[in-house]
Length: 307
Image (tube, rainbow, N blue to C red; front, side, top):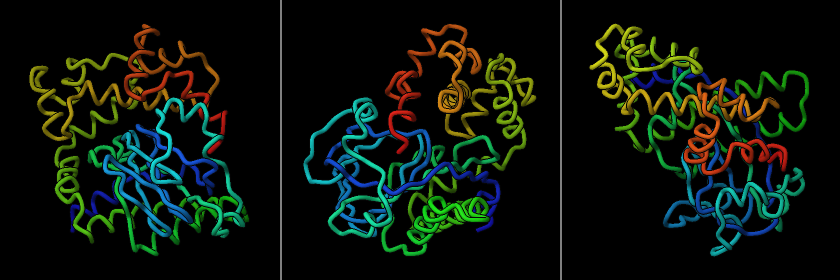
């Protein structure tokens, strides 16, 4: 239990956004993707997920780790299938913001959603680092109650709502981890994650990489930070994290790029430059390869429909 507590205490948890959604038209997204962790609570109707189209009904929840594509169907058993890119460009046709009255209307199919960030030592995406697939959460009234509370506070924005949302989001993450432990789900992955705490040199590397995304992050530089040989630093990093340092660096750079695309109006060229890519064309190719859509369309997804 000590290691689990240590993991939880290390997490930097941040609320991103929440909303109630009504399903305007049934759809299957073959490779649904979002950078942020997301938990969906089915209010009415059904959601199907994964390669076997497992069904979730009223009161069931689905947790989708950030950066992990998943097949996702809303509304009916076998709706039209499209790519995530096509879905992003036409989202209003399928999903729309719902009022609280519509959430309570059994004739309106839909779900509630909370998006959040959870990072180990403010560096490593916790759920993504476990390499978990999307997973169902059932018979967990404590979790569904937190989702509804967070959304209610977001909609009403009374005095202190921001603080309640922050505390509620932290509570929500803890309850999700408890659910995994209580149901003995992904225990091997959770135990493996405790390796982050076994060598402070790794934490130094995380911090350095985060602060120098637009600089030289070669193995030679990383070896000096970790005080190991250049030949060994890749093995050292992979042994503790399960990934090689250059793959980790690229993911961190792309995460930073997404944040810039969503929160600034700087050019695609400047975004690439700020996260360490001198060649804009190469940056755009790598971005689309990682996220499945071009950088410009990633920016549009926030303005097309804020859902």
